[in-house]
Length: 49
Image 1 (cartoon, rainbow, N blue to C red):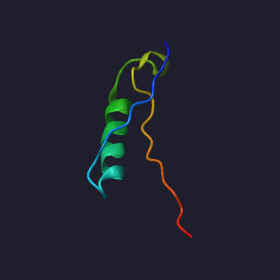
Image 2: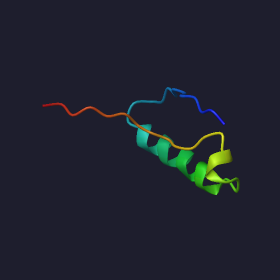
Image 3: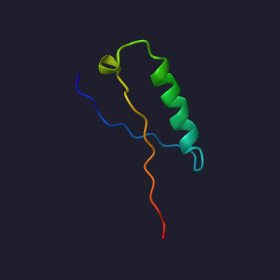
């Protein structure tokens, strides 16, 4: 199964909360990892120097 990228717009400051909620749903999916429609939730970050 081919996977695709999706972007989700969230309220500022809630990115990690949304990621953790998505990750919980992913982990609760009884399907094998290869068969899941969503495999991973990521929050891109940037270090400011």
